[in-house]
Amino acid sequence: MLDREGYRPNVGIILANQENKIFWGKRIREHAWQFPQGGIKPGESPETAMYRELLEETGLLPEHVKILGRTRDWLRYDVPNHWIQKECRGSYRGQKQIWFLLRFMGQDQDVFLRATHQPEFDNWRWHEYWAPIDEVVSFKQQVYAAALTELAPLLPNLESLGEFYARSLEERQQKK
Image (cartoon, rainbow, N blue to C red; front, side):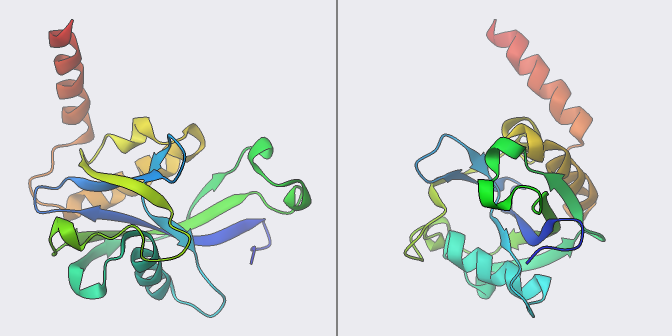
C-alpha cells in the first residue's frame, strides 16, 4: 500500500534498556544493522503495527515494553533506484515512518529472533543511543537522526549528540 507520493507507511522502533542503550539488529545473512521496522497493514494503526513488528522481529510482547513516545509526524526516506525491484520502479519511492521509543522492561533472554518463519535479524546487541546514525545504510541516516533527536528528550540522563561525538572522537584519538 503506497500513498500518492509513492511512500509505504511503516513503523520504526527504538527500544532502549535501563541504561539507555538501544536494540540494534543485524539483518539476516547481511552485514547491515538497523532498528526493527516494518509496514503498516491496511486498517492497522501505527501502534498496532509497532506491536506486531516488535513481536515478529524481536519476539517481544507488549508486557516486555513501555511506550515512552512517538514521533509527531511521518519521517520519510527515499530508497535508491538500484535497491528497488524493477516492477516497482516509478511508483515506489521509499518509506514514511512513525517512530516509537520504547523502554525495555524485560530480560535479555526474552528477545527471540526466530519468532516467525522469516526472521529479519540473526543477531542483536545493546548499542550506544546515537551510534546508529553513522552505522545504518546511508539513505536511512537522515531519518534515524531525526527520530533519535526528536525522541531523545524522553530518556533521562541521555548524553546529547554533541557529547556522544566528542567522546567518540576522544576515544578514537586515544586508540592511535
